[in-house]
Length: 337
View 1: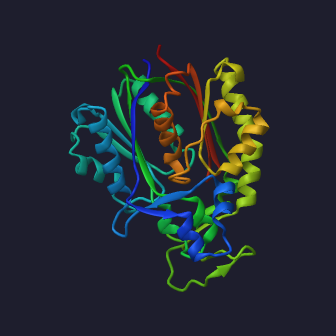
View 2: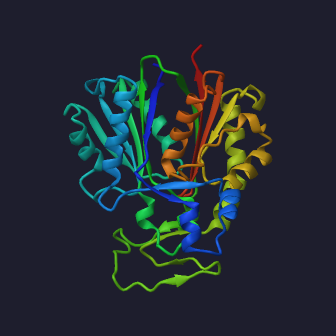
View 3: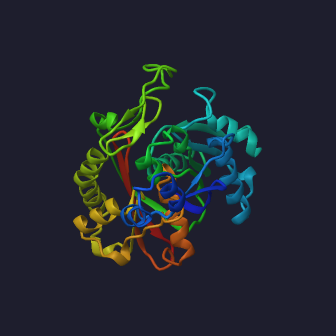
């Protein structure tokens, strides 16, 4: 049984952190430097009392309203987050109640970052192919800003908060979901990590701030990213990932009309595009006004590509997510003509 993406919507929090505001706080961090290197002009930050489930609900409600979807048709909820409301209960259960979805549905969380949306598509497709569900609500939602030290200018510049909701269905959609390639390498786990907060390293109030060579401040309660190692990882694995999904789908690069990669930052994306030799007009970037929203970057980019008419003009699309874990995944989409 085919699985199709029926519709996508997304939600951005009200508070906007612009490059101007970052420059005011860090005068050495020039506005043009931030824009040219990251490709980001502003990012949205979740409110003090706004959490992943709140944003997820708002994204889903937008999906139902924008696309005239009957919530009673949903029979499974998949929720991707690394910033859950609680360790337990499962945040997906909280979202089910807040949305007023049927109590007969399945609902679960899965903890993945930048590869999360593609993994979510694979789980949704499996549920539909196995005839366990017909309409899967796939939501991604992250509040990484709550992990970032106020004086960590590097991560503060890159990451934004957001939630995206997609309906994956056995009925017709604007894209059918094809093949998948996955990858995992846990040796890179410590290169993108929030060390404290789990069972191995509970949160401690006795944390000493550390300043790195670039002047970024953080401690073990905060998000740590080794930018050099993450860049090296993507440069090694993403080209292989792209080649593998093309081979599995029996497609060449020339057959692909649109490539939508995880929107990490402009510098990294352009490096990958040139290394893989993807024409600029086939490579979609949409992060200027929201930043790196982790698991929501790909659905946000797909929404914007559809809005600009690029999906309708495309026959074959490649999605690729990669990052924290290390974890990576790619799939091909085909538009219905």
